[in-house]
Each structure stands twice: as structure tokens, then as C-alpha cells.
Amino acid sequence: MHAALATVLAIAIAPRELRAQTPTTPALSNYAVLGVSGVIVRAESRILSGAVGSIDGTLRIGREARVTNVAAAPTVRVGVASRMGTLFCHLVSGPPPLPSCSVFTDPLIDPLLLTPVTVVPGETDLVLPAHTGTAPVPAGSFRDVRVGAGGVLQLAGGVYVARSLRVGRLARVVCVTGCRIAVLEPVSVGRGATLGAASPQRASSVRLDIAASGSVPAFVARRRAKVSATIFAPAGDVVVAPLGSHRGAFIGRTVIVGRSTTVRGDSAL
Image (cartoon, rainbow, N blue to C red; front, side, top):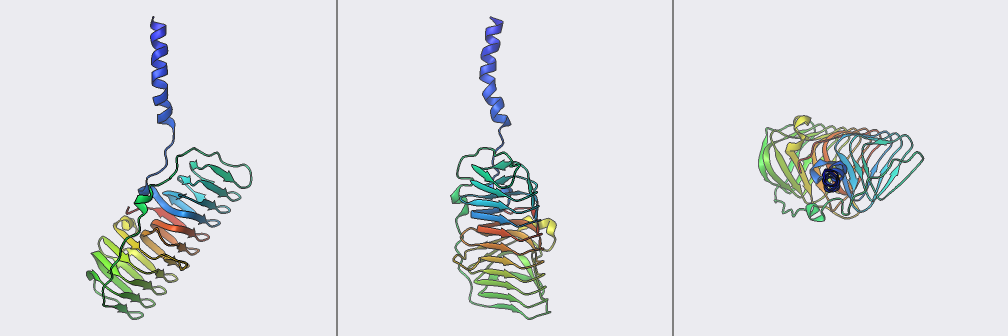
């Protein structure tokens, strides 16, 4: 009788144990890079924390690139000497030896969580000439926001709305306290420029919602730029140029992480 009872208990308990050992795909807030239609992580880039994934398309991880956390997509293409943590996929390809795929159920992320924002900008421009600065600007609505080369625009914190945002070469746009910025048209961050939290360790306190779609990228961070924020542009493409150092999250229709770029996940979602 004791033997029969032990057998019944083993049958009852085993499924729970198996479920406990099965890895699960990350929630939206755990992603450092997420593309709806595809993601490319170029050669020698480093995603040092946070997951990387594509919902409907292919995730391409370049030569000697490293994803220290989860990589997830229906189709994954890995490059020579690339490395990653747990891999979720239906199909993986690349040079041998190939990593093994953990199974997952589509969709990777609920599409309702990736609804583009609605943006109604103001009617007044906010223009900062090159090599000038401001006292912290209170929350408000603007038309076009332009920061000239080497300029410093401080945002006091709160909710900001704009038609467009362009940050010039070596310029800085920093949030003194937590900011949420909604932009209707594409956002451009110039070479060597800075956008986001005043301290990178507070990257999760800044979020940019970008409504732009179409053939022009919704967000571009050029070479050696530094972003400390969550970029949420699910209807448009996100391009992060080579040699950047970023902390936060990049969410787009497609996302390209340039060669030799570092991303540390710290999402505001």
C-alpha cells in the first residue's frame, strides 16, 4: 500500500517539478532591446543586462557579439563566436556549434502592450543655440525642440510633449528628475550627444514615447552618443549607431544596435 501511494504522489508531483524547471520568456519590462519585426545586434556589441528579442521576425546576433541575458525570437541567426544566455526560438541558424532553443508560445509579448502613443504637440518652438545652456525648463508642450551643437537643455521633470526633437553634436538633453517625453515626429541624437537622465544610474526614470512611423527611422542615436532612457517607438524603426554607450531600453518596429556598442538594460516600462 505504501509503495502504491508513493507512485501516485510521484505522478502528481512530477508535472509541477517540470514546470518549475522550464524557463519562461521575459516580460516587456525585462527587455533592453525589443523589435516587433526584427532586431540586429552588430558585431562586437555587448548587451550586458536585459533581454533581447523580436516578436514577429528574426533576431540577428553578429560576430563576437554578446547577449548576457535572454535572447528570444521566432528565428535567430547567430554569428561566429557570438554568445548569449538562454535562447528562446523556433529556428536557429549560423555556424556550428549551434546553441539549443528553449520552446515558447507566440506571441513573445502581447501586442496590446506595444500600442503607439497619441501625441498632440504645442505651438511654441524651444530652440537652444549652439554652446548655450538653460535653467531647468518646466514641463510643457512645444512644437519643435532643437538643441544646437554643444548646447545643454535641462528639463525640470514631469511630462513634455513636442512635434520633433533634435539634439545636435555633443549637445545634452538631461532630465533633472523623472521625465516622460512624447514626440510626434522622428527624434535625432547627434554624434557624441547625450539624452536622458542626468545620471545614467537613473535611466529608468526617463521615457521617450515616439509616435513616428514610415520609412524614416523614428529614433536615431549617432556614433558615440549616450542614451540613458527608455525609447518606446513600436511603430517606427530605431537605429543606434556604432560605439555608443547606453542604459535603458530600445523598443521599435525594428531595432539596429551598431557595431561595438554597449547597452545595459534599465527599463522604464
